[in-house]
Length: 313
Length: 300
Image (cartoon, rainbow over all chains, first blue to last red; front, side, top):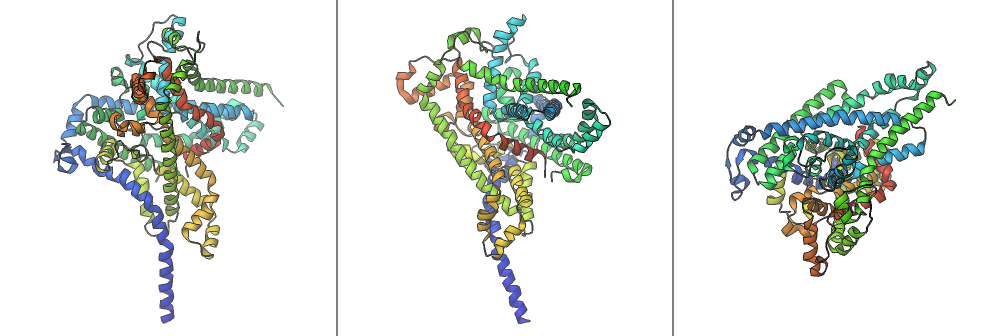
């Protein structure tokens, strides 16, 4: 009896000495999450306060939903929501179609060297910062020096366009720029799932005399569906977020374009940094976080129903 | 065996891929050619692929203002190095910890990580915390800490690698030999994890190298100019080309201030300087990037 007790005690001691290193290991990460993620989560109260900078976040008076009423009283609230969601939908549709087209072509290219070169170069824009992308776009679009206005349009007999002043072109420009930057990334994802398709299917189809086109239509595309659906649900979860770099840098933050180019992220930045308006930016920021959260959880619930294994959490 | 269909398919798919490749690189060509165009010629004829007059003036100007640009380069390198090392350090330890789900409390720790992917405080609250509580404005921490040092997604990728690709029997054997957990991680797990560490390290380094948002939020021209990285300098010049001349004048005196700036082409030249290291190093690291994307895309 006594011997058994000491054995148990010994084992417990061993266990504690065995597990404390793990807690020590996660400590730096937990500290960082606390500073970078959890502290700001409590900072959300800013949106419900009549923020007075001199009184600080806790000294300022509560004001309930007043900031949100102000925000949704402006017509900006509608346009930034429409832009954020609308662009995300357009990016997804255009990006997916182009990426799958390229992935299928890439898979058919027989020369290994050529395929490698294509992949490497198409991925290049993905590695460049949005600031540099804004310079690249400027070289094409600049009113005084741009390639389009100075070289291409005169050649075609078209009149120069004030790209950074005329907003109606921007939905197209932004979709092109986004596709240009991100298509390499999504192409590689689809390419790797095409490569993963068993060759037996194609072999059998060839024996049955199916043409390349028929093989793509009846084997490749249907088997890509799960990847497309996973990507779709992931992007549904992100539909309230926008890439600040794209909408801020590529448009050169031109006020004339705001109606068609300003997303929630740009609005929050503008209200916070340029106008130091804590109540409006805080309200817009919380609006984005909460809607995004609801959508991610909903999207995940749908994935879970569709296929347990591809759920995010 | 080479049927007609085979040939047609090859021509077609190669044509599509070549068009896509052409579209991907053509803006870089315009940028590079633009930077070598004579400034006066460019200001009347614009940027083209075949300029009438070539010139190195923009690069000469950069060489002259190297104090500003070179310093920004140095800051970019310092920030990228510190940030990447710190991020890998945090991520590896954290991933190893949460890979041991049987340890009491680790499920909660994992949840705390995953939850940050679902919900965040938003820019306003984050900005308030960093500036008013932690006081990082106009310090080097402004470029290293906010948002970039721990990417939940990367941590999960490393954790998955530990769980799926490191044989548990190896760790167990070391444990029986009396090795501590840190020793097991350092001597057994990490040497076997080089591929994932290279991939995640490279992605993190690229993110730090390309970052301009932290500088935009947390550095002011008055107090933080000495921490400007190359991306932040590019961003400032984008707003106002005179920013470069002003910055350079204040640091290098009146001598160089008198030399007129090739104001049209200088933008392009600085963008080239900023992007050059990536263009040069990319071919060597390409496979790691591709691996990183497929790891992230095809989920566990």
